[in-house]
Length: 150
Image 1 (spheres, one colour):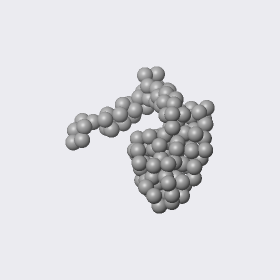
Image 2 (tube, rainbow, N blue to C red; image 1 turned 120 degrees about the vertical axis):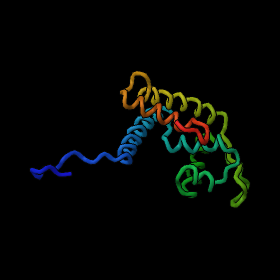
Image 3 (cartoon, rainbow, N blue to C red; image 1 turned 30 degrees about the horizontal axis):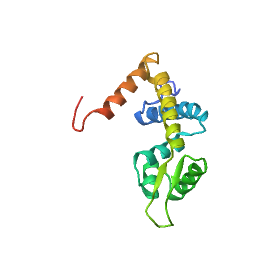
Image 4 (spheres, one colour; image 1 turned 180 degrees about the vertical axis):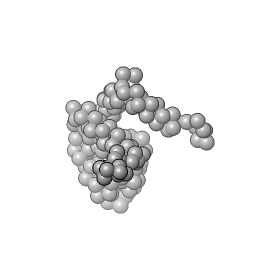
């Protein structure tokens, strides 16, 4: 948009750009909160997928995490090295048998607390009213029963 005097006007408001901007802000906040646990959002996501989907293949984990199978192999190896998961896969090509260890389970619980803190700061009662509304709308949209309308 350009004004008559040739100066640029305000940018067109794009829902995509707004969501992307908010997502980056949330990711930054989450990574800061998770850093004390030696986690990143990506690493937490993979650990959560392993916990939630027992027996998921490396390909399944890659699809769920939005990364390559090779990256999943490397990340699982790192998680295993940290004692957070066990890779009981007998050999290459065998069905996956990756599981979260008790240490990994404890870390997941602590990470959920860190995420809840970020949720509260960004979308809770003391947050900016617009962000409170965004948070409430997102929770409602993703907790509504299938086929329900608002």
